[in-house]
Image (cartoon, rainbow, N blue to C red; front, side, top):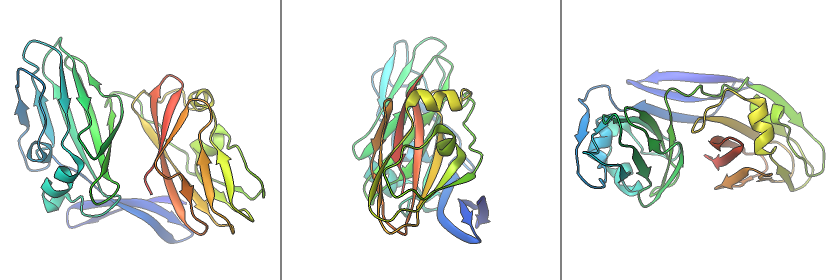
Length: 263
């Protein structure tokens, strides 16, 4: 297995190559290539627009007090981001930055309707958060806020085959490895490691950062994923027989994670 990246008409497609076959291509585009930053100076809570998001960088001045700002609703983002930065299909992604220009007053980010917001949502004075928005349905998106200064978790892309015909608990090494081939004779419910075990396995992962796990269900039955202590499952949670699923593990605390089904 390897990661596949292709440039097509100025956009980048990211996915996985398994045995020569491309699976789960994702369109990702950082939306700051051709625009000047958007400035937001509201003296109360602000709601960002899709047009501001399309600028790629939002410079937020909370104007003398901490503020809680709301990101655009999922349908507005899907409809309002220009086609060159498309969210036209499920799994497509855009990336933008929120920069707090105040040295003292924090800005807290909140989800708009039709959005699931995860990660490190408090932007401290003079800090920033990188927001990755993934389209999950025709009207909903998932947004993950990360601290650009956090050390991201890099999975080693080590394939693990689990063929036991019984419910299994994955080890932290298997999950951090990034790719599990699950071959089983009938429908099974497998369990993630605990949040503590994941944190021990990847101590450099900052709160708000994430890593992805691919589950390739090659057996006769579906695979349903259950979260152990400290791991909350979001979406899914079943990978149908013969299908491939992608689960993004987002670190939300020292020993807590959200496992978000992207596909």
